Image 1: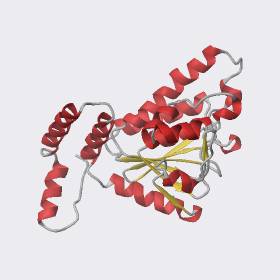
Image 2: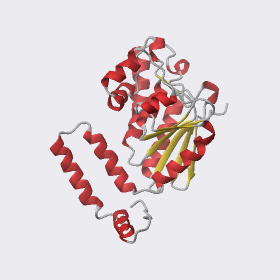
Image 3: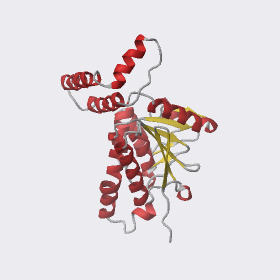
Image 4: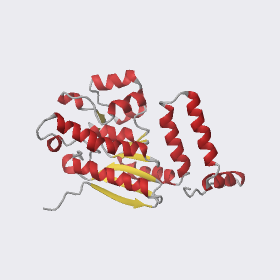
Length: 262
């Protein structure tokens, strides 16, 4: 029996394009799919030629969450712990910690653990059909895979409680209005706009992007003076990079910079 292809990975210039390819189950995440995604993000981290990543889904749904029939065969605590700690946590962490920009291109609704994938990325471009569906309350569960953590940080405690405790589905526009998504576009424009944004990210100063992402993570947990130390050291390092030299030269010559990611 041939093994199911759970994701596709391609390269377009300096952009790695990842797509979940399980439309027959609404791109639900089983262990094999999660491992394949983790592998793709690990490859993106290793390869200096990759300067940005885009993540989307095949078909009308971005991701329906965990594939419950596959994950919870015995409905035991150990199954839950294994999937969340051994499978999902490394994937979510690999997205958050990647030192390159990650763009989610939402072709359709994100539900369950799918909302965690979305919120782990740096920027989110959504089709008008890409609703935000917590879903956990429908099965007597609470959001997992970092969803509560991301919600608290992205929209604040009051709005996060409203979404979680009322099991509130948001339209793409509503999700954009409160800062869960960055942009909403008609479905017909999604691919073109997604490629445009990904290309812009890949053409940027990669090292500066990496340090900026790290500093933004630190800003949520560090005292002010400790953060300012990180900021100053980062800026001192960046002055040695070829991209900043090019940026300063281009500024003086009144032309767009040509960053090389180093």
